[in-house]
Each structure stands twice: as structure tokens, then as C-alpha cells.
Image (cartoon, rainbow, N blue to C red):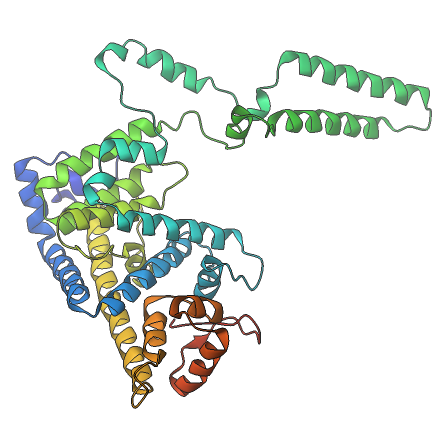
Length: 416
């Protein structure tokens, strides 16, 4: 109890329902002093990884970045308790599914595409308020002239009914009429069971409501298919998260990204795209110059550590754990770069004493730069026949990467 009473209010073990972080000058100095060691270690690890990627062979650097996207998508599914085998994700991304993709595989593929899009764009463009609101599907900020209608709109949002309750009263009258008709039929038939009549009436009402709800012929009907909590207040949560993002501009880059990610996990500004917080925190690192040439796989670092983020933990413990995850992600990135470099060196040994027009070296670079390679893909990229690719695969011998499909036809290889 003594140690807990000595803590500042911001590091309280009993967090308040709202995420409040007023970074005054004295408070910012206190946070930097308390988390300085973890912040420095994370920043150094991320800078070293980024420097290695910038100095590495372009083929190796591109391969490490693409593999990092796949590892991050897999880790995001793992953090939510799902199962996403890397081989199935890579095959699904290439359109070569061995089995029907699960819901987790589909989600991971969506996150993989999202990270690739974010990695191609400028950080300032991604983190602009307008772009964030557009990506999260949040309405624009209200002007001063709209303050009078704010309370009215919030009360209206609370009174929004669920989609299955939006059926008019006329439909309800028709349902009761159908139910009465079924009851009359049950009276005519002495052998009919009233319990079955009630069940039939319930099925009729349910079918009618679902048919009215699942209207795919109009935009409004398709929009109603997505269930949302009317009292979620995504705009208010996003506003508080953006305030934390702005207040962290005066802090070190790694600490600002950790606070932004912690606030995202606490506030959950997006009801449907909660995994984007890790990508936005990585974009903060890119914007601040800590990771110029790659988008760090922060969820992968958190997945590999024993620490698990929880809202019941004090702020200092949460941020320290996230900073440790940043360092772990950078360490894994460097280890994966070493793995790719070793695999490329072993395969290039098979390219020695070859003809000058041999494309075996180009096939090796294709293996390194792509998470998955098929015979058809390699034939298109190298502009040779599939039979030539089969012959080059045999020439690689024991240095050939792992076969991922387990099939005799339509095979695929990748360094995983």
C-alpha cells in the first residue's frame, strides 16, 4: 500500500472509466524519467533494425518488409485468440487455398492488405484527422454552429432500435393476423397441438422480419446488415484518442507511439477495425523518423513477449510492456533479415559456374522478395516456360525453400 500511495495519479492501479492524460511540462518530464530506460531501449532497437534494412540488399529489404506484413497479420489474429497458420495465410493471399479459408484467415488477409496500403502512403497523410475519420467511418467534426443540435443528435442515437426492431407496426399487425389464422386452423383440426401452432407462428414472424432486414437490393438495406451499438460514441472516443496523439508530439518517438497505442487499446475508437491501432502506432514511428524504411510489426512483438496488455494494469506497466514489445519486434526483424540473408547465400552457391544468360539467380531473388513462389508466378516474372522453372528448382537441390502446399500439383514454395 505504501508503494501504491507514492505513485502519481496517472499511474494509479485503479484506472478511471475515461482515459485521461494531461501531458503538462512537469508530467511529461516525470513520464520520461520513469520510462526513460525502456523508451531508449525500444528506440535504439527500432533504429538499428531500420538502419539495417536501409543498408541491406534491396531484394533482402523488400523480402523482410513483405514477410513482416504477413507475420504481423498472423500475430493480430493470435492476440485475439484465433488461429491463423502462416502457410494458409500466404496461400490465401496468392489465391492458392489448399482448403476453404476460415474467418480468421479472411481477417488476416484484410489486415495484410491494409498494412501494405499504409506502408505505401506517407505518414502525414495517414495520420491526418480527415484521413483517419474517413478510414474509420466517423462523421466529420461539428462546427460551432452545430453545438445546439449536439444533444438532440446524441439522444436520437440512443433511441435507435436494433435492425430487427425497425419493422413497421403494419408488419406486426400482419404477423398477429397470421398467428390468429394459424390458431383458427388449429381449432378446426382437433388433432392439432397448440404448441406447434405457436412455434409455426413464431417461425413466420421471424422469417418475415429477417426478410425485411436482409434487404440486399438497396444501399440502406445493405447498410443495416452491419450491427452497430447506437451508444458506442465512436466520434467521442476518436476525439479523445486524437487528443492523446497530439499531446504526445513533445515526447520521444517511441514513448509517443506507445501512449498512442495504449490509448487506442483503452478507448477502442473503432467498433469494427480495432486492429488498426497497431498500424497507426507504427505509422507514428515512421512519421517521427525512427522507422523510415519499414512499418514495424508491433503486434508481433507483443505476441512474442510474455506481457499481455490489460486495462486493469497501471499506466506505467502498460506502457513499459508496449515499449518492450517494440524492442522485441525490432529484434525479430533483424533475426528474420539474417534468416533471409543466409537462405539467399545458400541458394546463390548453386548459381556459381552457370552460363551468363542463366536466370537461376533471378529465381533466387524472387524467392527472397516474395513470401510465396509458384511455378506459374515464376514463369511470368522471369519470362520463361514452366518447364524451365521446374528444371531450375531441381538445380537448387537441398537449398530449395520449403514446399507449402503438400500437393504434387500446383505446388508453392516459400521461406517461412
